[in-house]
Length: 70
Image (cartoon, rainbow, N blue to C red; front, side, top):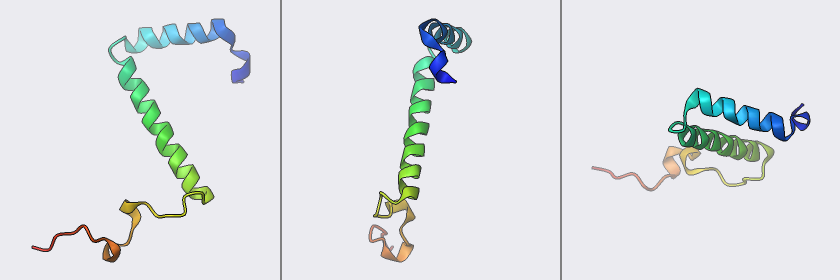
């Protein structure tokens, strides 16, 4: 599907996105898409099993040593 777009189709899509969101929103939109793809990539890598270590936020509470007892 995407292989048939070509350069004129890609230019048309970029112009439509620029008109819809405006030049001030494009960097914010790009960052949001980048973060989403990064999170998806990390989740997929974790599911496949390439990431053998558990991320810090998923560790069991009794294993964490960064808590301060007051």
